[in-house]
Image (cartoon, rainbow, N blue to C red; front, side, top):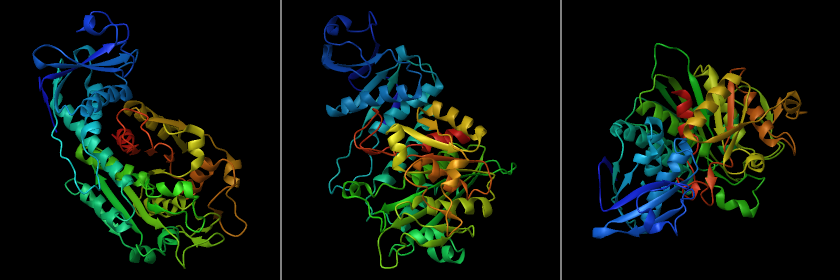
Length: 464
């Protein structure tokens, strides 16, 4: 696809506010077009030209989620009519640099093709013009494309069928995605995991014929400053639930349990490509949670990389087990000064917030305030969940140092606190994206069905 300044093609996109007067072609459409938010109307005018009106309602177009939606909606509408050359007239929007980047992200996310496994793929060359702005759009388009590419990578990894994305292949695709950046890549195979006695990762993935890996990505954008932030993402490429087998109605989605891993890889790639002045290490434990004769079962006691023992009470609470080892590795081996972990972790967070809000558990007010401000800039919604000592007590085990589930209630809190117990008192923030990483039907115009690529953008924004 190509985006350039100026007119392209014979179709023009014009934005109209609710109850706006004297907009172009008002007399032609006023009885059938009300300019409600994301309402569209395509119609022909003189000399073979077409106009697509897009309603803004009463929304603030400078809000990032809104600016992304209004561009994505227009692109998807014209795609239905196989119109591949058109121009956006954005004069009435009065976008600043930040909102233009969001607007451009909406274009890229709605047009750039997702990975498909069909035998025949139709190639589409789309050419887009931008008019009505005095901004220098070239660097802004470049930034938007970099961010969008990471989101699309994350979507592709989560959407990938399990037989196409075993842990080894996932590790290789991660390395391939960041190869032309300043990111240092280290991939620890199962033999090294055994030497390090990473019992959480090995307990979950060690019995699969497709063994686990630990991927470490290091970006030193500010080598004079020693502080390192670790971002750790759950990378379960297929999750059957183990011997606590998932119910049949949930089996269709077992391939998409690596959204946290995809997010941290996308985030560190954004930082490296934009040459951000930060030091970040992304860590991805990637495993399969399958059933085998020697798979772990409820009642087992695993010894984690930290040396602490874990009573397994549910083999479908596997993500926190692999994150325990990865977080310990971040603190001990990578010397991280603070830790963010992210995972598609609990159904409880979906019951709380549905499919549009991620749940955050943290012991650092500073990290939360920084992260929340970043989320306002990207348009991704998050809510902080409080916790207390009573929730920590729910994880106490009679036979081990800790157990991997805390009971029937407060599942999102106890899952997060389990991971926190391996952060060794470093400032810590946990994001549960079980609801936001996947949608059967898009909630926003810039989304597609299935994987959303959530949080790659916000994590990068937080660290920049």
